[in-house]
Length: 440
Image (cartoon, rainbow, N blue to C red):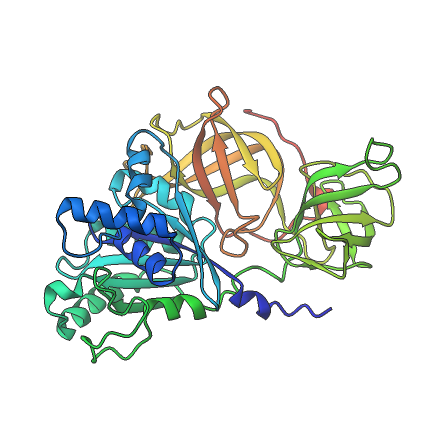
């Protein structure tokens, strides 16, 4: 079977929406769902009744998501509303995140699995603080495609000069970020201009409408298909009630490609063997690649347990206990230098200690604050931590699956931070790994 993954590019697109308060994000999502026939008749009737009761002239499509927003305001903190719809070209999962500045952590949660981000800008206000914040987070989270929608063009007379001025402002800021692909689209979510169909009111715009941009965004190369990584989630043992003579390793591919016959090395033991067979959801398959769930059987019965990782001998992840990490802090209680937390990385769990806070990031100016390093809720900063056992990781820039982690309060079991591992040095051979529990 070919290892070409281009067929995945048109299957499913996960994208997130971000914007400041009242930029029209809910209306845009409602317009996409409405124009793509992704809402039920009873939902449409309810929206029509509510719009009439409010005395509004245009159908209020924002009501499709306002109920979910109200739930968040009632106390659901780290939560994201997901919406699903499809067109003949592609299936979509929308992560709807709130626009308030105090919900930065929500955007991080929703955008962590996204391949594309839509940032809304009110054409009347231009670039504001939240625009810069969301663009920075998209860059930090390595979202490869960014679509900047200049909404409410109807309120500025659909003027081209307004569009061009905001594009220039955003481009100047984005030049300091690492975003591979940026698209600018002038829209009116309220009236549907350039959302699904090209707008006759803006003949000067030569690009594609938003839906076509979403349908054709190429995401086949976004996943890491170069570095084979298989974090072991569960060991299926023989002589159990269900599997009498079967021993396999279950988990989700975190990168690269594995095939039967491939030589693999198990970390941290460093023991080597070969893959005998790969089982997918419906039976044996010729290969496994990210993000497939799979069960691997091996030629030899080597000692492997949950939290271990399978890789190829000549393509190993980094192995170590000292990590440089960018964190987004979720908890009301501030990060404690020297504090102890539980770290979860792929399927591995370990205790860790915060050895140092390098700096806190000013998201609006992109300056590093080395004097004020008190990291509180929604702050982003760089830390140095040490885990009690070696971790098997890549930099987040190279692999979002093996380069991400979360920190958990060991007393309340609450998730307090999400982290992205920064660029690492040369890989360490498995036999050189060690356990240093000093200070933990």
